[in-house]
Image (cartoon, rainbow over all chains, first blue to last red; front, side, top):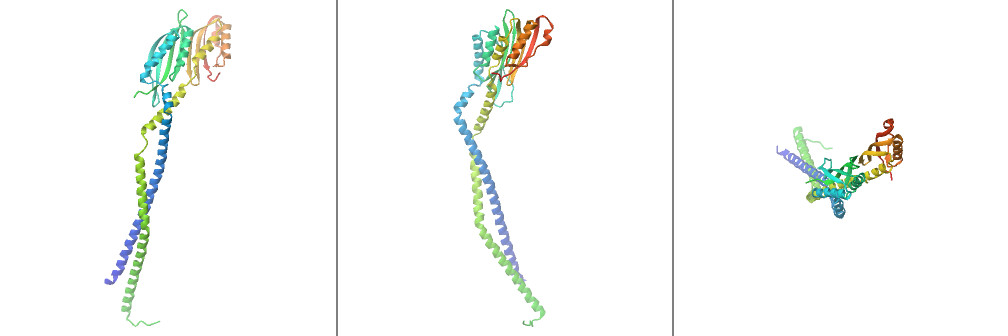
Length: 171
Length: 179
């Protein structure tokens, strides 16, 4: 039996050496794959980082312009001022007005809402026309959605207006 | 060639022992070669492991330092704001339409109601009133047709049935591209 000992010993040594080599090769392959994936992710993350830096820089550079643009948009606190502007325009054009409704409409917008203001007015045709022009020329981001005027008694006219303002969403 | 005088069983036993030692020698030699190969791979093993760990740590550091989400939110809000401001930047239309429908009004035609619905593509207008004669109504319609701001103005033929004080309704579109 002793004569097989060198053979068995040699085989065990050989098998152990092969196992060790296989372990080293598999580990090297795994580390290379891990490093490649991590480097790809680092490249992607670096691009994202550059984009974020560009966004932050853009927002910083355009802060004044954005602030100026935002001043054209009505916020919750500015709704009263908008109604006051309409009243002032009515006085200027010598028409008698009633604010029929002020309501936030539905929209698919994420950060803004339409603010619908319905107004009724009585006055001469020229005055109602001038008032319509004023409503189309308000300093806020707004648009005249509809205008209806009909003759009333004593050469007076009755007008109804619907104006839509751009309003920031309430928090 | 020599003559082996040993008895065959002894010869067989000696040959067997020889091949066993030969095989043991081969296994040992192969094992030695493989061990040398393994040792030669050792630097690659340690370098690749260090490389993978360093890349993973760098990635983790990048992820923890990301940009604030508020920047993306602000940019999205600003983008929507610009888009909406463009749609709200509509030139005054009602004043031009009112001017157009009143300046060409003949003395025999009286308006009783006006509807204007401005839109991004121009808008719709509807006029109702009374014309003293057929000719007054035709003159008014012709004057409106000549105005480049208005389009689709057609003679309300059903209103021509009467002879005097003809009630009429005109519906047409606004051409926002007109100067």
